[in-house]
Length: 366
Ligand code: APR
Ligand code: ZN
Image (cartoon, rainbow, N blue to C red):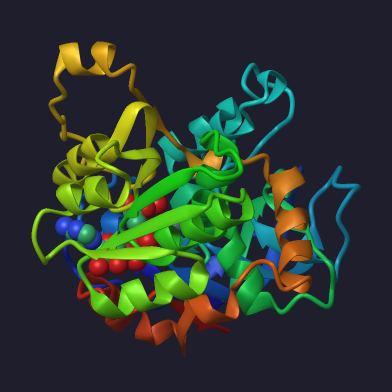
């Protein structure tokens, strides 16, 4: 038996209940979680914005210690410290062999079924299967994931900080470092400075962008943005943020703009903040029904690029150990992202705090 936070019904609070966890099947590992971040995508599942078959254990940003390995797992052993990836990257499918492992076909299959790669889950409650968000399910003391989703890290890396790498850092930092084409000296605008947006900002700084304009509607998020590398801030509630960004870029617009909320209105703003020849990277996950209008002539005449960024275009086996190194060199801020540490029963309050924009990240520690 283990405690887990289950989403049973859209729009209802998660229920912390006892579930059974099966032994790992072949090619899987059982992990005792040390920590799980609470990400906006968890809230998006709970409120129905993001499709995930339910009932399911939510949570997809975790780190912990391997407790058991399934048959055929040779590169991980009991006691290894790992960060969990919410996209299993099998290394063999079309996308993995074409340098786009974030789009891995095994990962897509798992995502669609709500289970692990074979479509089944390792959680049951009173004999009834409970699915696992994004083939992970980190709102649980123990989970089972595909071995390819458990990325070994150094033992001296603190696990609550490591957990944040699993989604916020890979998604945000990766959008700047992998998806976008930022060159030293470039100008960047980032709309939305939550847990993911702050990582876009530190990724842009890492890529040596000279000007980083942070846009948010909360002043304390803009203060945090400065700490993460923003050189200018724009409060979106204080006049037209597009006009402000144009003003800060000699009327041209930024070379690279990022939307990190998932609203059509802010996607349009980010698009309009990009200069002619510039690119707009959409990181925030919009509602599945959402379409946003763009002017067809403008996109050609302006030679503009709109690019989606899924999981920060990350190769998790390459990038996770790299982020651990950056943290240990002091070049990746993680401690500063943790607004509060909570226990599993605090997960619904963490959703409320996120909805009101109070926190960068609440982190559940087990
Ligand atoms: N204009 C500017 N900023 C806004 C606006 C707006 N209209 N509305 C919300 N914000 C800001 C909030 O103040 C907050 O700082 O956007 C930020 C969103 O941050 P979080 O709620 O912490 O969300 P986060 O976890 O960063 O995820 C953002 O990225 O990966 C995706 O699914 C994730 O779609 C979500 C997005
Ligand atoms: Zn996430």
